[in-house]
Length: 492
Length: 95
Image 1 (cartoon, chains in turn cyan, red):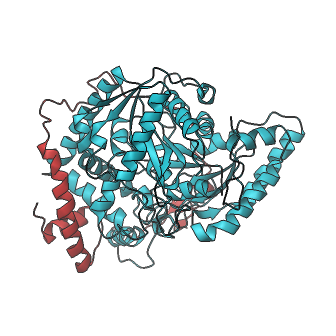
Image 2: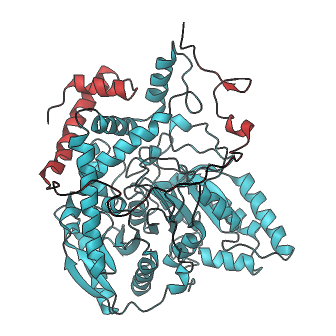
Image 3: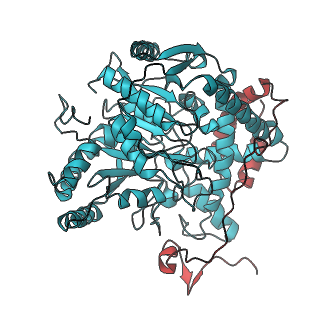
């Protein structure tokens, strides 16, 4: 199932899939060391032009690969991701490897522990090759809010890769890694996946442990995989999901174990709802026609598609920005210059130490969100903003649940716009916020959703389709995404 | 939505952030447009929604309180700006 894209026409580097590498390393066809060295070389030769990485951990990656080769030689069974080079978004803690959140605040922060997802990757014998660029503290939709560098979209280097997991998306799209981890608070996996023409999955809230993910909006944040193919996405999800006592929001029920095994099953009779609220004035016409074409293809495969309306779905943006900013203002209160993080050289007293640390350590967008959140939570405004937003969230959740009583999936575009030019939207924060209009309702409702490539614009820019499932509906999402991927066979 | 510079200065104080006059000016304008957009939430009918998160049967998760070693002390302190023995050094807060 994994074949078909070892080489992409017009590109000078090979693309290998997660499945190809893990099967090849486990079966002795390749050594983990040669795979790791090949990808490190690729990163070194390509990343100056893309800017996907903040840290490349060559030494530890080579050592890990060597240890894995030793393990295989000694006859021990390797893990499910044997020798697969993985890039990790720089808001996910890696023991001994700098983790900055793309912020001056954490420029020199070296975590004392691994995030649970990193431990899981390592226990499955994946190789961590580097940490990827992002919008500072995951706040943004273009990766332009990084304090350190701009990431370019590998499909068109004058354009943004989306955000906030733009570094992870660009690294995968350019073939510098076969897989990466991102995090998604309001679309930060799905929108960059759409912009870069790759697959990105935001799992159900609670399916993947958030332990070691530097918090932004704790009730919305989820870690998820970003890959070239749906099958690779399924394999990565199998490896990173699971109950974790260190995350009190971790799901306590049964976990589906074999997502990849379900791929390729017929989607005949699958009930798909196309959400009317997604097809409004702000939607790019090329994206609309590409999504509509995918609907026809899915119908051709036997899915039953209806247009439906979720009245609350069109109004989510205000509630999302109120809740996420409120949670951010509270979560980011910990950065006070005392225990870790940026500390100014001179300060008169403890108040000045805190104010200067925060004002000099945080970038403009982070400060803007802290201000908005503080405002929404402040006395006199709490009921008008935060409480109403929470009520909206509950209403949305119940309306979405109502749809899933009749349908298996909800379908729509992942982004209203094609990848925009670097710098184009930086002057107007509200315009930037509108880029998330189709993705935020998924986080507010805690649902899983995937972005899968569904077309290419006239200018050669990728277009992403979003499939939203019910809670813990990852298997059906992946099944439908796989069917569409196989049907479209896009040359991206 | 009318936001004054004084509002922004007050919020900055609560958030322990400092801004230049120029930044305050810019933030005031941005706040006005963003909060204006946020007011779209006022148009929705949410009177009948019960905001209680636990109304649908969800429960708070507890774990047993057990002593565990939560990390290597040296590693845990390696990001502190300045230490004295096993304590993090901070500016004097009492004269």
